[in-house]
Image (tube, rainbow, N blue to C red; front, side, top):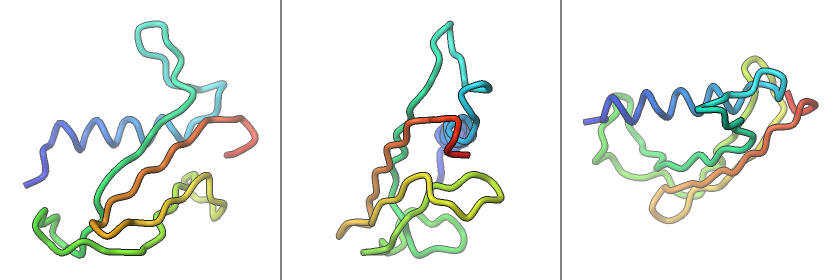
Amino acid sequence: MVNTKSAFLFSMVFMASLSSLSHALVLNGLQINAIQVTGVLRCSLNGNQYAPPLIGITVHLVCDGSSTDLAQAVTDQYGSFNIMHAQTPERC
């Protein structure tokens, strides 16, 4: 079962990563300029956390409505991926 708080936090960080520096996320006076997205890609249509992992799949980070990659990573033998992204105005 997916933890709703974790899913919400991931959604907020993901949305923040897509904004330009002029609209960057600010938390307690700190401007967030870079994010790290980690996860496990699984073969599941219903969010089953015990579904088999997808190995060797490229995960893309793109702006909403864009086809340009901001960053990408390939899943490992456990289906895990790690994407680092630094915001720059010209990227989105």
